[in-house]
Image 1: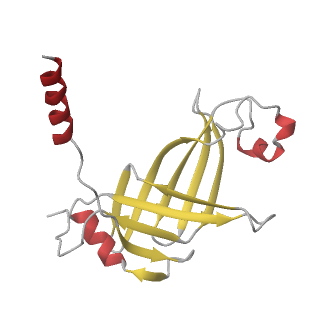
Image 2: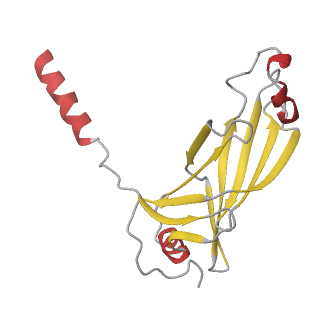
Length: 170
């Protein structure tokens, strides 16, 4: 009986496997929104077709250019503005998790962003013009800590091949 039960569960789990998703670059732009690859119309079409989106960006440290970081995120909110640009909002991220509870003097660069003694959340609004508006706030009480508007080159990926799509309004 155990053998049949095991086979049943293996069969059910096999049927539940998600298919491999192919992500495609729809748009890549520089920090001022100048298109480097793909195009804004491809991204807008993908949004109108209901495709999933991921936004990727990275940076090189100013103080030590050998140190880099790269990010990719799935937005929680996507907007098409006037049929010409896309704006997304990223979900909360505990920005100081790796140093939370450490002595503040060990991480003085964290002080303007909430320090190391309280849980600090981060959220961002990204646009296809290269703008990247990040905010930091206290996780416990929602108290605003700081805002850092910036510009970044970004890559926008979609999980479909964009095609013809009508606007989402009548």
